[in-house]
Length: 368
Image 1 (cartoon, rainbow, N blue to C red):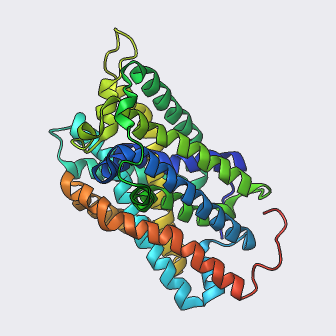
Image 2: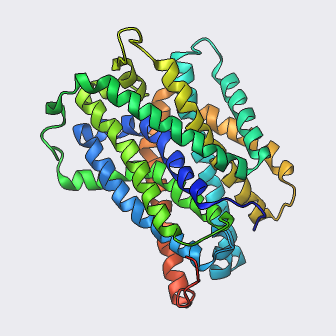
Image 3: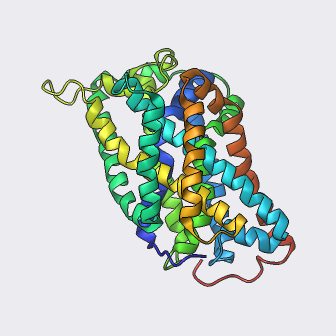
């Protein structure tokens, strides 16, 4: 597929970056409007389901270790059906980039650059992401270590800054909406989990060593889930679900409640500075995967031929998706989350049963 190579530790750090940014920035706000104080519990259920399908995708990749998900889809289903899956994934990654980029851009436009035209912010951000794609996915994956460390720092400062304001009564009664509602509502988090599941189909072939990758994937997903779930849990205890519903970017409302010391009562700019590293990794990864889908479907050899036109498409998608906060949240509520859940769950299952029926899973590849 590619001469790019990454090691397993870089792969480990990459996965929490693919999960973290949008999940704490926007998804929690989407879910609390539907689930109230049960948001953190429903998100936990979603991650349990998501980890299972992430491991299923990695298992499939281990049976075709040098092929991307598009390439082994063509092998299993034929050129045309495999190509259709590639087109579907390209559209998904374009939308995933737009949702990821808007998470970052709403932080900037709502709190720091209120007088700056939103289109200009979109263009500047895509230029930064284009630079990352031109540098290559190996560089982005290496940079994920920085994003991971910064995400840990965000969590540590949020937890220490708001611990004195916790009101556990806000999360009670548990399962107030009912267990079935919490389970069915968990599909909202697949807007984030599906980014990791489907991106794994492009990252796995790049691994220089493929031993114990399922175990590494499991712990990377668990780490990312713990880093994320603590946010709606603490936000519910500090803010309460009613106040959370009033914010588009709930994490910034939470940060405004944090006080690290009496000399640093507010630290939104510091938080966004930390947050930007992981968000950039997520956005560039979605850009790269969209580019690679088009490359493999169309058979184009030169990256620059695709990157520039694709960047224009991404700017347009990002701008029209994020120029109105309410429309953005409505889109994430429906149909984006449902589409992501269908792809993140449906595609690995479909490919698994197809491979099983064609006898492609009988022979176990060494180093899976």
